[in-house]
Amino acid sequence: MSHEHLKRSRSPLLAGLLFLGLTGAAAAQTSTVVIAPTAPPAPRVETVPPPPPGAQVTTWQPGRWAWSGNAWVWEEGHYVQRPQPAAVWEPGHWEPQSSGGYVWVDGRWRS
Image 1 (spheres, rainbow, N blue to C red):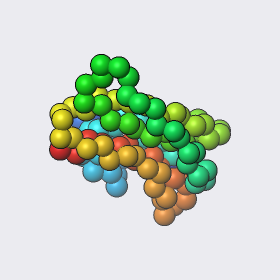
Image 2: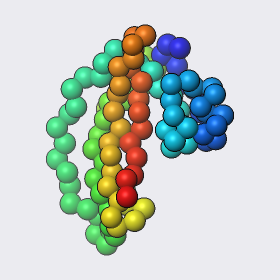
Image 3: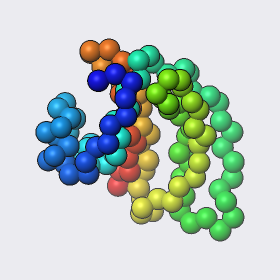
């Protein structure tokens, strides 16, 4: 697989069969496999703005580099509502592959 976006089933069993090396739990949390040929650039420094007025239990998700299929594109950080007050966001990351390239691993909520 090189430089492609593949739709991934939300079924952990099917996803595990289709994407060997990924756990069913990881497959259930994401919808797309993104593979980039090179490491992303260094993250940009972001100034975290105050939460929107009246926002309830939000957390900042930092920006990240995304692979568009032919170039790195910066996606700005943003606020999201937590699924529960004690939930903590574990950011996604680009993980190098032994066969070459980098695969995006989605962030997730931890309770």
